[in-house]
Length: 609
Image (cartoon, rainbow, N blue to C red):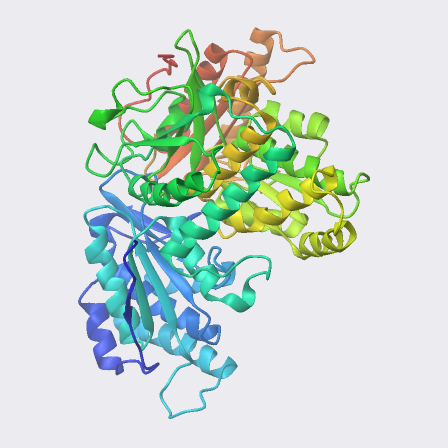
């Protein structure tokens, strides 16, 4: 059984200012940092640069909980897909999702306060806000109730950094719940379920690690069982799923699911595949030549560090990233060729499945507004398939989970989002839950094999199976596997839905990422002014070279990284050579026009193993 979290009970009374100042002064801002920035998923830097931020964010998370009248919040210590030397922090708001944008500004201000005196001034301002909105009914000096959940990944420096956050939150009088080593999605799940009044009634409340496994395993099995009356089929090539854990936290956690899956098989749910997990912590370097980031960006199979991985079947494989909030699928065909199914392919599979089930109950498709949110990284072929074949609405949002998540929530009753990198989930709004309730009342008493009844049972389990707070590799893995089983597909059938335009991704290190500015959805660079003109000339030249005509046009865009001083490049063309060439030219332009660091980039050549 998973270990119970360690709970430090607080009394809502902060330490005196003198002691808080001493705690802040003990961890000064490094001279090498001019300004900490809050990226697309929080703070992320080389680990030795973070103690200053982590102390202040421990205080901040307590104040955020107080500002919500005691609703519980979270802090996850991880650098996700980054290399081992880096670390960072992702903050979870009381709904389980990312920190509210307005409060990001407060977090950045507190992280960058030049002195402890200025930091205390900000702390007092936020404390006054909390007590003003939620006056204490007890003695003076107390803040509203504060509860902070803490989780961390497997990096060697995560435990001491987590200890700083715990110490600082406790200094504010917060109750701290330390979950130890967990995945990022687990931490977000704990926070979402801890605030039960915000949880839709259709989702069973499970606030701890064993509950996380239970709710997802049972929902997964319930979805699989609907195939008994609709021809669900597990093909031989899909009988064993090999999971690349990126040498991170996801590998040991997926092993915890094995106990639940064994129990379900014993109860007759034989459609669950056998799982073979490889690349555990300690087997190899974290995220190095393995994991979702490597596989998706390099379009190559992962290195298998685990000794027992020799000879494993590569017909059905998936890769997580270091904190298990991203997932991609891949396989090798009979000729040994590698095939990637990235977040775009997942979005197409999931959205088409949900829309098909919705239309079995509502043939006109008017009751629930279902759609997909993509970013500029989405392969052009996937966007055309969603619009022309799935016939769903597509919205393009700025890159980053906080932007696509917000767009899915804002635009749709059922919003599907998966970035090409494999981070994504499905959000279900109030109209969906009302639709399910009405359908349940209307279909009650109809035969179980009735197609609308089957669709209802499938749709009803999705909100519990899907981790709606954030992308979750384990949750998404089970959802995708269940859909493939219900359709009787293997990965090659899925891959053939549409051909991807060949693409290439890369990055160029620069002295200051702020030099580059883009338009709202990052499809074009605004500054430096000469950059977009040069990129457009390169795209036009490639279109002419490839005789694109009326077909898909080559495209390329660049954007500053949300996590490091680098500029990310994406190029897509009608041939791999064209995509490589376009990406190489973009990298040279960035190095020349945007303050590239080091030697000029070398030409890119995709190596297909």
